[in-house]
Length: 219
Image (cartoon, rainbow, N blue to C red):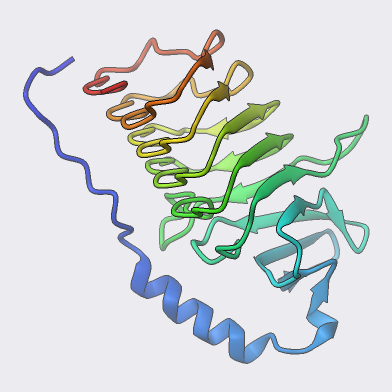
């Protein structure tokens, strides 16, 4: 692990692009025919429904496994979830249920930004996701009310950076990543920085074989 200090940028590199996309979608997708169970549908084909924003009024949001009888794909934009969200769960996975595809945002699909800075969020339970992203840096950063996180049965593709995933989650008590496969990860810098109330942390199945940077991981 390098001893020299390595600075990491938490600011999204795709903010302007996302704002543009949001403006375009607000114009193009405006009628109820394009909303299902509170989720705005950005695209639909014969096999799949792509959702880009929750527009319902619940603070306890459930990510659907299927919509209109089709597999669900989510783009990890920063505006996917409202700032008022308090809990996030995934629809129960049954035998034969499809995994929900969650893609990183940006031109190269590199980052999951949907949960960051949600300061009313208290609980996250993600199960049965297929995460397509190389970067989960700052995934839950600045979720200051977040207390419990459990991520299980999730397939990941080439996630290399997990810097500051829970940085400044000052209310975080319990984290279970025991079934979160991140075998390609190389950096965990500042992953739990500022988590002053953390009591229970299960990383038992976390593969750190390729990790070269754990600087200030728990500082």
